[in-house]
Length: 397
Image 1 (tube, rainbow, N blue to C red):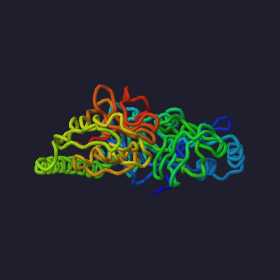
Image 2 (cartoon, rainbow, N blue to C red):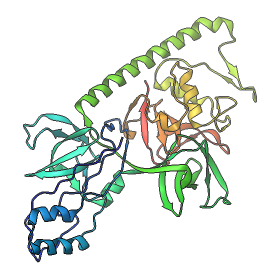
Image 3 (cartoon, rainbow, N blue to C red):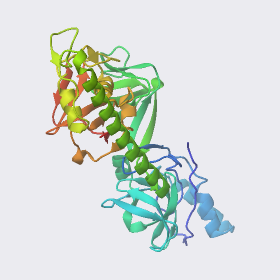
Image 4 (cartoon, helix red, strand yellow):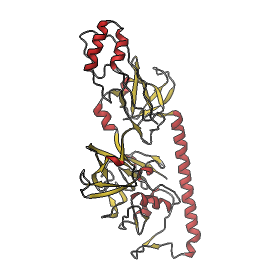
């Protein structure tokens, strides 16, 4: 999925006394993350990797010519210039989004959108416009809407993640195999990286921050990138289809429960470990999902489990709650970050799926989630909902 960024330098005049800065040339490129990767209003993410370029001094040589004085200047500059991986990464700083156009003009065709805090690679300049590449979009954005070469800003909007590549990853309290086991994470999960050192990676999980061996994870940086017009249209269509399918699944599940109610005692079920009874799911909206999920507070957490009564892990809990409404979801907190459609954390409604690093829960209102937390606490309420950094909020209904 990686794509080498186009490397260009704008023509510039240099004198013998000129001191080059890291951002004096638009060179080095590499938000290749995914040429083709989609990050859009629903906040999906793609990997971003940075790579070295053909070299600043080679481009300076072209601008100065082939004279001996030029060669000496190039040699001097080659020693002095140290490129940062963030030099050509620009971050959008806008109220919502800025259009990516086909030419350096307000009259240029709109090719896509770059949302606030999204990243792009600057390929060159044309007047007061930057030519950029981001996701599967390449075009022009007015320079005033982008902050170029600010490493601190790029780090703050990027998300360093560790993809688990072993069947069951042990997370420990310290960077040693002798340290206490905090928790376990299944293969395929995506964890937020807190720190990296000496073959160990510090990650965030529900039990807290702990260490994992770098041997069992792949680390990369994710940024939000541009969304093309075609990708936006496809996303909106998919979201509408998923919403209608979820509503139809809930309607069918409700009809099925009604037709079989005469053959069971008021539709209640009981746990194998208690005499508690549970009302069947009723309705087909987010509030109904939240109401149903709240009944299981106090039941146990079981790693890998999917039973609402006898034990589920965080994603198994969400999956099984929605299954009662006829909606099939994956048994993975990372995968749940891509279901339905994305909403802003500030606009959460009951029934929304709230995703964290290696964890997931269901929003029930009043700034509270219900979730299968840990073995020590089981299924419980937690408030505020942003007690940990929220990675994504997804809505099914």
